[in-house]
Image (tube, rainbow, N blue to C red):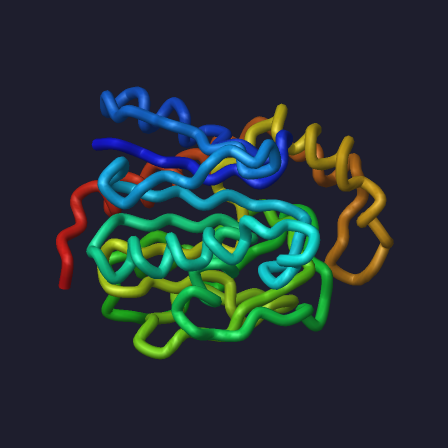
Length: 231
């Protein structure tokens, strides 16, 4: 399996997914878009992983590569590729599928529970236990036409969706490790505004048990997607 990762800022890499992909013997190529590295061609990957970042999906004046990136994602989806989006990546998938991305009602940062949504999607069981997961986002997406919602939270109605069996969009971060959480605090700590769903830096640092729990969820999501067929 050939994985192409689209990375938008230096401090938001694939986290615990690196070990999961390596354990399966997958080939990982990271495209650092903030360095103006070229996007991959469609025949270069089997699986597209679109990571997070502090920009908005429509910040094309400052980040002109966003336009081509959305086209790449849309083409990958229509071509039956596996596409996994995290936070900004989920918003880019939603926009590539024609749904709006807007500022959320609340900024959501830290460890907050999500509620699984009953669904026929193969990804539904991932969130049936209403797990507590790691969040860092201010924008949100509407559900694209034809997509199945997977989870919600008090702060954000749309937390995850599946489009068919090979496309998974997660507003939250299951890939986060202790190191990547510290990197987010270092580079985006000015967003800790003390609002209702924004936790303190100490709370965001979390516990080993919390990071271990989301790592298990990330591994399960990868396993489902790796074995998914086109509907």
